[in-house]
Length: 383
Image: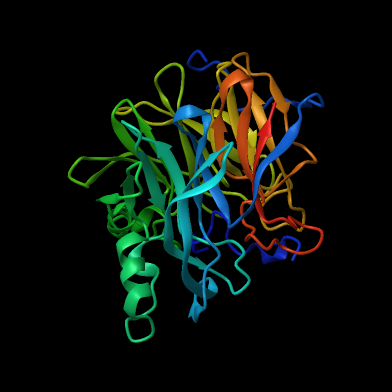
């Protein structure tokens, strides 16, 4: 399976679509439903909202992958893809949505569903924010089919990591996607059916370093100041797996280690996604199991780990229901968004125990139909 867009992939079928080692081990604990939590929409009419990160002053940074465009091409492994300049990096505040940088590359099907473009954000130093684009330059059609302004934008943005300043100016930090693609091209034995591939899906700025989880290359990298990347971990799957691990998020734990969530863990069925614990210089270890299609993750002020589950019934099912799972320091698991979330993705922890999630994360602003995400993509608060 090609994972150029595997983190959200061919989802048209879905309705249209603590202390280290505290919970390690193969067994997953049962999840209890927390019915006392309230889910409140704080922003909607968004185009494929993905990654979230706390911003100064109590706001949120947000990556909108856009809604594609009108330059459509067919014949690739994902079918028809339509490119446009509809992506953006945003600030969500009590004043509404501010597009810090707009007019960014976006590719989707003709409906604007399941776009790829800006996919992740992480608060940087001195009021800046790191913004990560998905994919890589190798997914583009030949120059004879795709040229001009759109091609220049795609080459400058797809797979790239940017540093965005408060006024909206941006500088290119690294072509992470292309560097990861090159790494996989020399290691095709790791995933013979899929490599070479790269699809950066999450950026984390922490303690002066930039980390990127790549859903296509199945790696976590450290992005150096010269733009080169150092592979910190490759996430393997069992020999009988249907797919790859597909790492989708990264967070710094209270113990200082990095925690990486995955979409599949090698299987499309529920309960196969894992959370890895990564200490640079050591082999990654599985920290938690029994999750499903993890897209976003992080730690709250309570020390608990949170993971958004994109489709609780498993990927490529016709059920759009998602969830947020809280894993306490003692390993106790609680469902926070059951029955109220659909295709959730990004996660951010807020003050006072609140958490924020990008909901309807594969929907354009026009929605996905009368009954599914009719107000488009959303950011919701759960507390």
